[in-house]
Length: 279
Length: 315
Figure 1 (cartoon, rainbow over the protein chains, first blue to last red):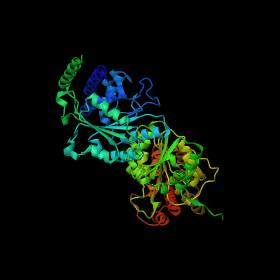
Figure 2: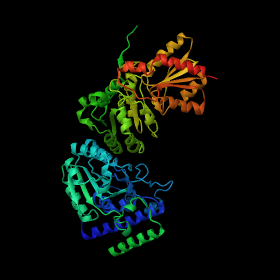
Figure 3: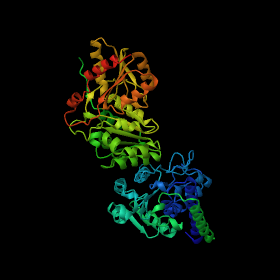
Figure 4: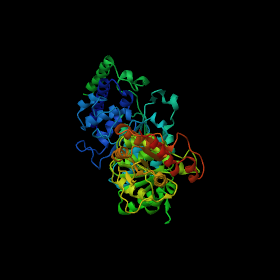
């Protein structure tokens, strides 16, 4: 990734953040905190990593993506729109009656969504199933999935991890969006999943830790290491919940709340300023 | 008298998987450490490269199946009814049902006739649970022949299918030329005094109840309802109109199963008495299966009693 490419990715991520905030504000509901924390991961995957074709979203050979932390749907929708799967104007219909943009991702309704998710712990199993399907039936593709750090408190995550390692699904790459906050508080206080890296290691994964999951260079580096693995990979990415909107950053109360008009204006002003600075 | 062969429906399921495996290779079979019991072990032996064991992790198995199906491939997953429909209910609902994916769930060891394992394994709620999932097809075969034919039919369906099989060897009811059709009830005996609608191992009991009633001068119609969802409304409404009273018989809770499904149709379309025979809101317990069926009143004599009650309720 050269400088120009990285700048372009930063711009995409910033526009996606605006899309997230606009959609959630219009819906008066949604999950901004965990959407903003994984925006760079999704942006990198859809713009630099994954083999996809927005004109042919069901292309059989495409790489798959499963948003296991399905409540970060606004981030996925914003990135898919940026990538050309549908008109970004759709983002304003988030969570509305008749809209394809359901509160959580729906594979039947939304072009580019590979799996319906929302009930935590379930997406990872579907991702594992897709990886197994590729190994068994072909064609060759990779499967990427993003999990929340709170989500991995679900037992099903570890059932899936055990299976993926046992079946040597090295075409599976998981991200744990480690923003350290869940609805009831910090993950350490609620029911600590730490140490996350050692758990995935013990389950037979190739584990890569990155100390800034909102940094494109670090995401790129981790993903290229994942490509060389003979095991499934788990990338434990330290991120900032609410990243990019000052009052949402590291604030647990912005897990699942929409900004009022005043705070919406402030968030958009901050994001527009950040965008302008990118040049 | 010709001796009737007894075979468990799960055996028909296992046989059909192997037969299908020989003629097509576009599907995977999975189990959760119960391959010998569910009979998927036969497929595993024959086609080890097309069989995946998920270990004791049914929730993950349902999710993996959803993922495979989401790539456009066919998959059959097996466990006991208790764990497939019960433990993994929400995975079936959200990962398979909501996206309407082509997953066949082969659930064995359903009902009280599990026997000695007792209440924790005697699933009498699975039909009720699966019936609430939009787009789910539910098939509960009466014997080994129907079980085999139903597996073939399920492979051709679009969307999720829940197939219910038993552990206990039960008498074979159907000939090899029996034609199974998803969503269609089959009238096995003609009669106009009352209709017995039965499913699973209760079909054989219903046929015996027909004889009991016949000896008492009552002409019962007998219908095999293998597909519980989508339910065959036409055959039910016709029975309500022509016989004026219905008995349902199932090895399942009377809450939410076949009896409820029939009652819903009759209540809305052509109200006549519907008397349900099944497990009455109670847990099972350990014991030999055949004795449990006696104890829980899942026998021909019990159906005949309920039939007379239904007739007495006619206006």
